[in-house]
Length: 432
Ligand SMILES: Nc1nc2c(c(=O)[nH]1)N[C@H]1C(S)=C(S)[C@@H](COP(=O)(O)O)O[C@H]1N2
Ligand SMILES: [Mo]
Image (cartoon, rainbow, N blue to C red):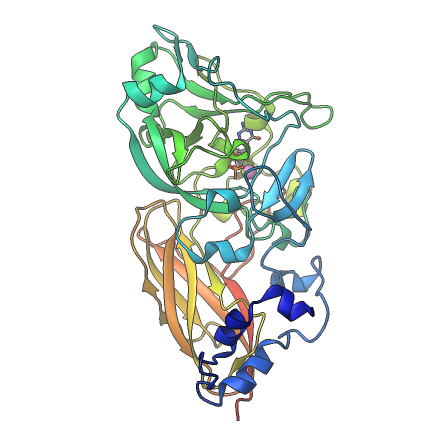
């Protein structure tokens, strides 16, 4: 048995090459097309991931690994486990649970949670501390559902020049899901937030040594009680209609719509009302961005100690071409459908445009179904390259607040907030 036979049944193979069951080829032009598709578009080997060509890899370059409840995903680090979602899972508006990326900070993450003993605690500066079991959360409160993008602050960090420390994510540290659970506000109201409180702090089940010398063995995040986003937060026990995978925070996680995932505490077990500011490492030192437009600064300014920082918050507008992915040549004159996704933490995406001439002319893409302001929005556009050559397809999204993706890079020491217009090289071949 040769390789091709092992991978594809005869019928499957015939379907791909466009041969009907009677053995007739559908149109002779399919012959050369198939040959071309098997020829890699990039004749050269793997391009550098560190140099100026870094943008040519959509995902990071790690090996694939299979963790419990997950399909093979791209390994970024194994202690703690960090996994990136491969590009093709973004063809749809909702990212499958088993392909959803994974990011933890501390090593001792739970392998299981015993629901007989597990309770969500609401404590601190409240009138009545609460301890609620999962059945109580499901039965005592009205379930709410909302689609929201979970994106790591460091998504696309590998694009930064000069490089910054931290996980060198490609573009796959993001995902969109339909989250179902209890409104955080209802839990806070039931416990009764006392006068003089300033923050609500979130803590999950894991522990482990934090960054060396800084001694933060708990991952703690907090939000100001005056922040209106608290009214939109959901303590979610369902992800795309199913229990959350352990690695994505079973049994419940916080969903902070429009905000970076650093606040989306997994295995959420303690909700704590504080009457003092939160000076813990993950608020005071980590996850902060320069208080400048786009969070931009320079290594020189950082060295000079001139940069004032603020906690990272909302997702800047972004868009991606998902297919075609540049892995095969497209014959000149063939009409192809460009497909992708777009999102913004500041409101609905209401325009996606594509350019094949370096950003001189832009054509408007057709938007897919609207699943809400904080969801991925799919888009598609029809494209024909008339003549052979290398094309660079650029995609740009604009949200309802008129935020548009810029064509300038961003740089800050955390490697956060990347949202430059993304490009995909496509090779168009001679079809005659
Ligand atoms: N308990 C806990 N929750 C957490 C984290 C963590 O380390 N521990 N990391 C946060 C960060 S920075 C990210 S990017 C997201 C990743 O979510 P995911 O693993 O479900 O994709 O979880 C957030 N919630
Ligand atoms: Mo993150």
